Image (cartoon, rainbow, N blue to C red; front, side, top):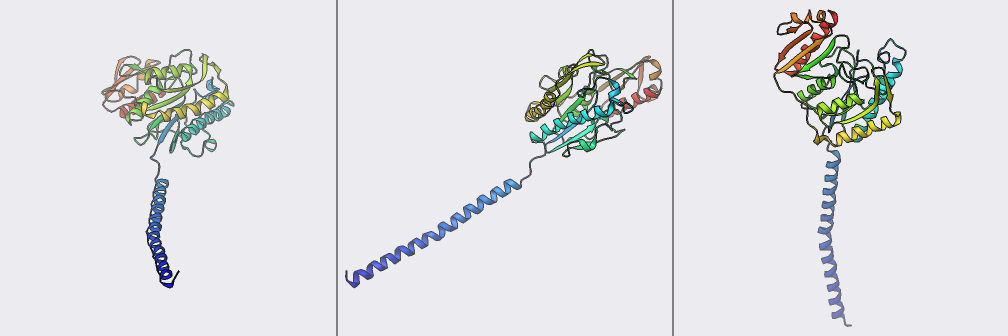
Length: 325
């Protein structure tokens, strides 16, 4: 090969190298841009907060697993402390299931008696606890339009139910029955209508078998219910296996939250007709002094409200007056 041919080949090789370098630079830049774009997208996805999924839990005591007698629900009884532990265990199982299903916030409202029953230090630390009384919305204090779902834990059947553990409606000493728009209401119905006021569906309930039956009858068969015991009479029950009940709470909470789109808020239509039937005529004496309250029968008080929440508060006031009459 002569020098001319050699020079020609060297120049040709040099041109190939330059061309390769020319193509390499934009390819590298393109790769960098793609990688940077993917990283940025992933970073934004990771940083994007989950949409809020708030759940409200109202916890009563008579429907808690193991509770069969009023002494277990009374702070002056030696049996009370153990029942409080069962109460927080039931609640924690539900809270656990909710967070596993994607809840971002859970608010627990202590809803029995003095409303200072749940042992705060033993409640799941992820949950917010509302404790103490009196509270304007009582068993539903803390609920508002920002919540996606409502759950009732440890609830009981309405007054006059049988067999049912510790059946009563708000006040066993004063209330024979409460009707709203002609429907005889258990506490679960009264409170479900408050949830409906805020467009929040009740998605789950726990209690004895009769309470679960009443809940589905009123709120619909899609309601997730977890029975914890079957009443023999008002003060005796067959309590289901503890470990299974707690597992059912977790499973039920997950199922309820995962099926959220299938629930609708429970709503009554205005005007709201309230009828409070008391145990005796003396209990109606003070309530009838309030403007707008009628007394169609010796132990019955009635009134009408265009706003359900305002009507609920007046109803609570009349029950309080009945208790001191």
